[in-house]
Length: 85
Image (tube, rainbow, N blue to C red; front, side, top):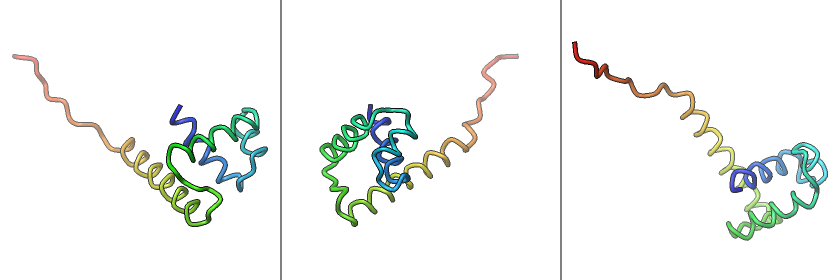
C-alpha cells in the first residue's frame, strides 16, 4: 500500500494537484486519491498545502526515483564458478 500512496502523491503533483486528473491517470476513483493523499499526510506529517513542504516532498520523491533507477541499472555482483573440475 505504501508504494501506491507514493505513486498517487507523485502523480498528484505531476497533475498540478488535480484530484480528477490524478484519478483519471491512475484509473482510480477521486475519493481514492483523496484518501491516499490524506493517508500520506497523516503518516509523514507533511502539509501539502504548504509550498515549502510540497517542494520537499516533490524533491524527496524525485530523489528516490533517481536512486531507484541508478540501482536497477547497475550490473549485479559477479558470480564465481563454484563447480569443481
